[in-house]
Length: 435
Ligand code: NSS
Image 1 (tube, rainbow, N blue to C red):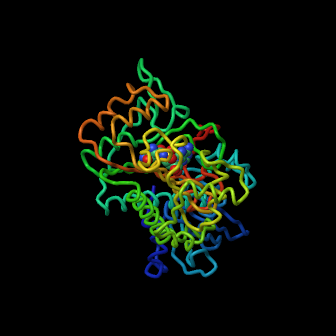
Image 2: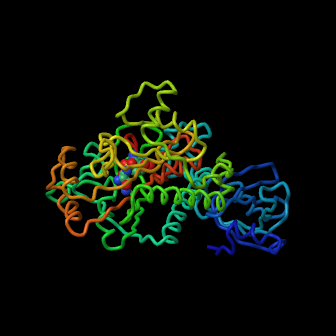
Image 3: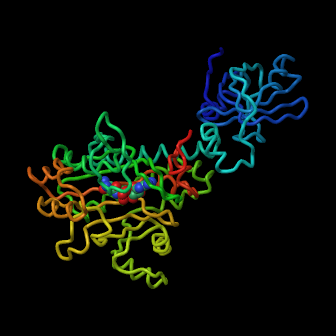
């Protein structure tokens, strides 16, 4: 097997230097077009796509026969000369001299007019498209940006467990698993463990999957999603909201700068993302209710917001915004009640624009032991299941706050996707567990 000398991207980057020189590239046949004595192959590798031209009169008959034989998505190695050609995508092409077929592909099983369901049954192959590649690259930058933001600002990365024994976000969406002869669950959020780790490192974060047995078929729910979570000692609601808007803005700036080509390819104007800078507007739950009632929605104080309400509210904003201080009843037990108004809690949700809905849930936690016990019982949980979590309030408790950002929802919004399943390489939803 020949050894490649360059990647596709390297050929484009050094094209002028490589002009009329021989290169060896390896990759897959993305498209093939035959015009009698002239064949074009678009060769795809991990870095991009380049046109290969094969002229019958410029290559051996055997080589031409091999290019005739080669099928879509076959893996091949090509030797050829770099040429300038304004008609070729990217302005350069490779004029073929020789070709080696490594894996001749069977007939491609995804037709042009494939249904969504077929595309996702074939997701292991469907991922090989330029569109999916662009999404994966934006996704990579979102995660890289989050890491970078935390590192630059003194947060320490930690690794909480996935097998857990008690709910963080409500029993209804826990996935139960057999753990030898005991019962365990898959984590819904690493928050409770991050709360233990702030007593060691003060400002911690983790990037890990969370699991929710969501039976809802919506455009924004996965059963397995990637969660970027942070928790800090000595921080109150206002301060954690600042961290949240800085993080989201940092992600947007980096993606707009480094992935503008991919964003444009996906139909997202990078300017939409570049304008996402702090401060984000903050509206209280009370104000949100008023706005919704004015917009004609039949909603009363005390009710939670779903996709419909979030989309209605988002009509008034062109970047993410906060809704803070929700009624205690619609939020999990750990939220700190507002000392001046205990019917609401010191929480915040960040809502993305354009109807993408909630991308962050966070707020200040209860740090008083008795109050926490009371809330655990009120919500119908057994304090015995939360022994270690309650202990944290016994030994040097401090005010603290944190949040969780749904990374797949952020990718979905930034890439302007119509469904969250496209934001993940192998989505898991109520109806999908394969491939
Ligand atoms: O339920 S959350 O609102 N909050 C928590 O889990 C906190 N315990 C996080 C924390 O403070 N450390 O979920 C946080 C975010 C939410 O805003 C969504 O963006 C995302 O996690 N999320 C989801 N994304 C995709 N699919 C599903 N099912 C999902 N559920 C939440």
